[in-house]
Amino acid sequence: MSFFCFVAFGQADDCALGVGNKDTETIKAIFQLSEEQIEKMDTWIVELQSQSREIEDQMGLLLDSHPQSTEADLINLANKYSRYKDELVQISVEYDQKLLGVFNDKQYAYYVSLCKEAKRKPLIPAPEEEEEE
Image (cartoon, rainbow, N blue to C red; front, top):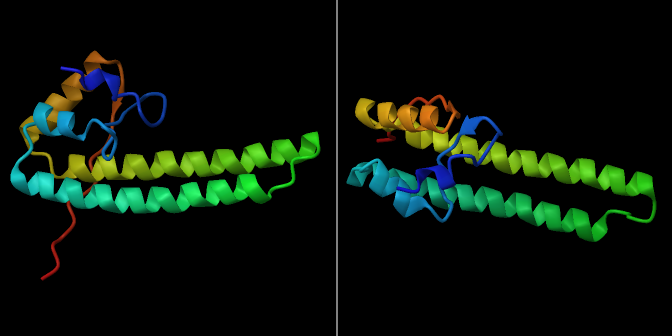
């Protein structure tokens, strides 16, 4: 299976799943997600896409409005842009951790074994959120 093509998303050494990326179907198949897990992941993908879109809009505004006439302007622009990119990566990792938080022991153990095989550091699962009644 092609798990390793998306493992490296996120920080350089992190073993990220890439929730919300084009490999969502691969995640479902490799980890044999239950219907409940798929529903949660689908909800989180919508949230992730919304948050990402907001940041990407801010990045576009930055590029359109930031002065770029001097080297100092360009360095300043690059630093601000880099912070937005880091924020996108952090949000993605948080949603990966949410999904890992609903993995059962067998699924998480398999994830850890794949990470070790890819020489990546497994992410820590987020605690499962309590359902509102």
